Amino acid sequence: MARLSGQLKYFINKKVSEDSAWQSVQVIFSGHDVPGEGEHKIMEYIRLSKAQEDYNPNNRHCVYGLDADLIMLGLLSRDPHFCLLREEVKFSAQKSSSKGLENQKFYLLHISLGRDYLDWEFAMFSTGRESARSTVV
Image 1: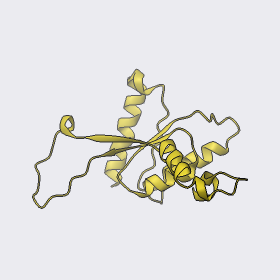
Image 2: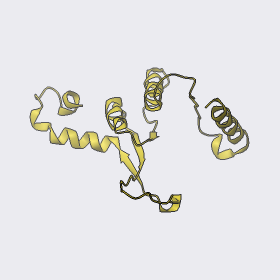
Image 3: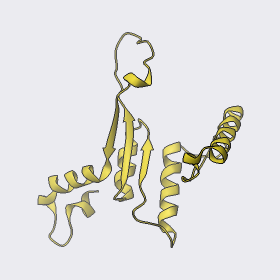
Image 4: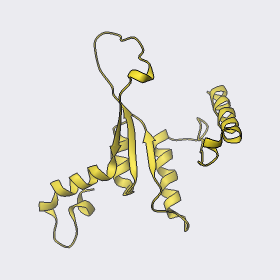
């Protein structure tokens, strides 16, 4: 794991220093030596960023992952520009041959839309003083 971590750090440093497309983004690497699950480390970083005085509320966050708890973590973030990138997972009895990326289906889930639908679905339970969004999610 340490060797993989070293290689990833090398790759990131090389891309940031040589590739102009990488120079305009902030790359944060949190390897195996930092305790915690990846999605929780990402959400902690977003929470800490939002607490900063110069935080831009129009920042956009897109997290890749297949864990279902990412949906709940995204909803809890209350961030208006948060999306999840997920790939299609097919379960079958047969071992399928590895597909190339050109054949892989990906889904982009905008958490704000899910939050709006939950708000609409549970609107009848709101007390009038507060929206269903603040009590349900």
